[in-house]
Image (tube, rainbow, N blue to C red):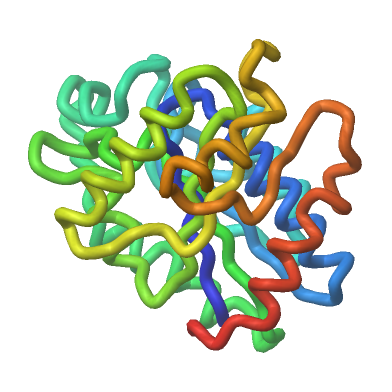
Length: 230
């Protein structure tokens, strides 16, 4: 099994869209995929399938492998930072529990597969007073880390700040993806080239509103399939 962890420079940057689209693109390339979201807010906890329209439900529909249960592992009703709901409901988010949950896939299927894990919020959004999505991603290594950012004004700062913070923790993303998650502005369409021009990583894919998603993801899919990283 190979694992991909999808992180974001913030909230609402298009992580679910990227995870869902990548799951489908990998299947077109002949790969079995299980996509899931361990933590999601704004939905009611359920022991069976996730609520219709939730991020978790979208990812299940994009998967070819039987989904994990319960999904999400941690579901919270109010659309706020997960650590706030976890404290209010006295239901702490435990990274070890998430790691064991995603590890069920090793026992549920004998098929060679890729597992896609979407985090909730930004890289450093808190899951508890001390732990963030970065800590969760590190616990899920070995994995390929994909950082998602919006193709919009402010992305140069957001990507630089996120990468600088990640470097202090000793791990940076393997790929960067830009999305059309925010309204188009004067910078949209130019940010990919500008990121590289100012010394930041060149995006492995740019998902615009007009481009065919599979075609836009093709370079990233080829890189993932060719990579030696577990």
